[in-house]
Every structure is written in C-alpha cells, then in structure tokens.
Image (cartoon, rainbow, N blue to C red; front, side, top):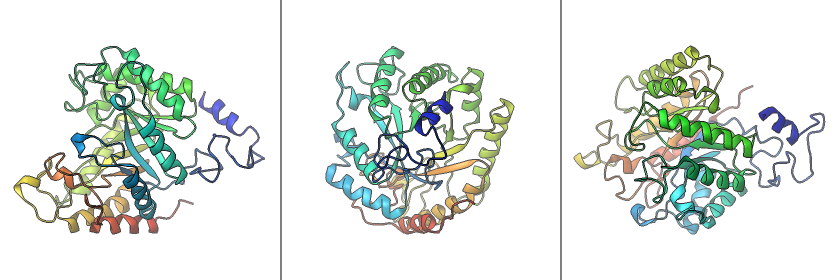
Length: 365
C-alpha cells in the first residue's frame, strides 16, 4: 500500500517533478516544503528535539504563545534542527465529544512547515471525558480513533510521521500496565486507520522507556509486529557515569536482538528522547531520576558525545534531544533543566555544543 502511495506522488521517475510549484505533489509548495523533491528524503540529518511547543496552559506556566513560538523557530533553525517532536493532545483538540479546536495546532504546523522543520506528532493522551484520567487508555477505542482520523486527515499533507502515545510502558503514562496488551490493540487500530487515511505516512511506537526490550517483546507477542514502521526508545543515562556510552550501546544491542528474534531487523531505530539536566549548581532539589544532575558544562559534553558516538550504532537514524527549553518549576526537579536554552531563552553551553554537531555533520555518501 505504501509503495502504491509513493508511486502516485511521482509516477514517472524520469521526470523529477509533478508540478512546477510542488515537485513532490504533497500539497506543500516548494518554498515551504522541507523536502520539495521527495518528502521521503528528509535530509538524512539526525538532529531532532523534543519541545513542548503546544504548552500554553496554567499547569506549564503558559510556556509558549504565538510570539515566543516565532522566536523559538528561529532558534531551531540556528541550531540546525530538522525535526521537532511534540504532542497533539487529545484534550486540547477535542475538549468535548465531537467539538474540535485546531487554532493553536494549525498555527504551529504552518509555522514549522513554512520554516522547513519536520514534525513528529504524538497522538496522546486521553481526553478528560474519554477515560478515568489522562494517563488511562480510552474507555472506548472508537473515541480515540475518531480523534486520530480528524487529526491525520487535517495534516496529512504536512505531517508524515505519527507516534502512538508516549511511553506506554511507563506506569506514569499508562495505567494500568498489562504487558502492553491494551496498548498493542490501540496501536493496531491506529496504524490501520493512519495508513487508510495516508498510506504514505510512517507510524512509530510510543517511545519505550529504558531498557525497552521487555515492552517491545510484549508488543511482538501481542501481534504488533506489522503495525509500526520505526522503533523508538528513550535510552536515558546519567552522563556522570563512566560507562554511559556502553550502557546505551547495551540497550541498543538487546533491542536489536529482540528485533532479530521476531524477524523484524530491517526497521530503523530512533531515539526520540535522550538528554539530561544542565544545572548551574547541583542541589538536593534539582536531582533527577538518574541521581545527581550534571552542571551546564557537563550537559554540553554529553550533547557532543550523543551526536558523535551514538549515531554510529547500527540502524540508529535520528536522535531527539530532550528538551529544547527549560521549564519553570513544572517537574520540580532536575528535569526542569533539560533544555539547551534556559526559561528566559538565554543559551546554555549545550546550545553551542548542539549547534557545532549539526554544523559539522556530513551527509552519508
């Protein structure tokens, strides 16, 4: 089905264009298209970032408005970031059954597209009316699928990568845990629907927490093999540990072993969250789940290591740094300091480290 969709984008490959102002026929004009000759070619640059661009609520201190979003896009371009990951929150978009609100997301999608930045859209969490709480799966799967259908249909010409939920193997983001059974069913239904609406899109897992192998194995055992195109995990480690690179490499090796076991070794692997705090001074109040927080200089060194060493792992195609910008007392821990820039938009040492990595990256031959 996907190949048929690709062939309709450009039926005669001896002719590199379908329309003068829309080479790949994806509905996005060349001047706004991140990849006007073929949307499948996304530059091969591995540089992504997790950024909560959709946050404009009291619980996140109204992190972004339209003015600061425009400022942020300039920062993304200066950093050389070609891909941004953020949530398409069900409760934002459909606060009441059948009532859809797209103003905020339309602005975001248009702004990023016009600036040639790709989007990895996360379809999550449960709307307040559709489940016992935001981190429970929907009581009726059809309600979620209705939301998915409207979102993908609306943005299918501009967004080609969709992620189903976030960290469904975490008891914080998915309750109750059931060895991925319920999630696997949600994944299957969402995949089928996404491909029906846009056969050319790519569907990712929900970003598995470390080490990822048990959740992935359960998805395979639940029959989910054919219902995702890219495997994505969040291999967090503390860069203060001397074996930090080896720890991630072992996670990757075990992941590949599970993929091989289930005859699924051809898929690419994305690290859709990987980062650490960068604090000015470690304190008891700014630790994170991996222990002591690195200072800003140590965070910058980790950025350099991540993009110089971890991209050499087999089939690792993209790494999304978490996060772009610090938060303001949201997590109330070191996690608030994951940003490459501070809350006030001033640059950390990690900013320049990331920028140097993206500027020095060479495309594969």
